[in-house]
Amino acid sequence: MARPRIYAKGTTATQRVAASTAALVAAGGARKTFRLSPDAMAALRTLMSSPEAPDTETALIERLLLDASITQGRPERF
Image 1 (cartoon, helix red, strand yellow):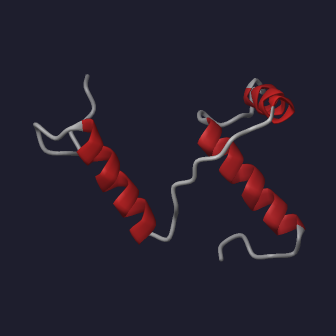
Image 2 (tube, rainbow, N blue to C red; image 1 turned 180 degrees about the vertical axis):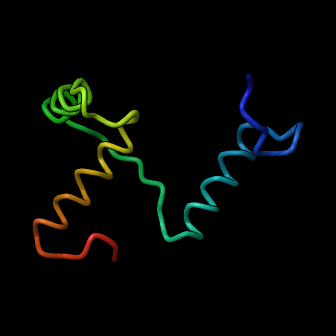
C-alpha cells in the first residue's frame, strides 16, 4: 500500500524540498549543510550501526545534540 500523497500532483522535487524546508523553518528548525572529517564520518557510521540507532543520520545527530545540551544543564527544548 502506498503512503498518502503530501504534495499536489505535478510538483517538482525542488518545490517539495522548498516547501518542507519552509515548514521546518516556520516551526523553528533549520536546514544545515556541513562537512565531516574522515574520523567523524567513521564515528557516525559506528553509531548508525548500533541496533538502538535511529533510522536516519539526521535523527542521530539531532539526538546527540539534544543529549549534549541536556548534559550541559540546558533544557531539552529551547
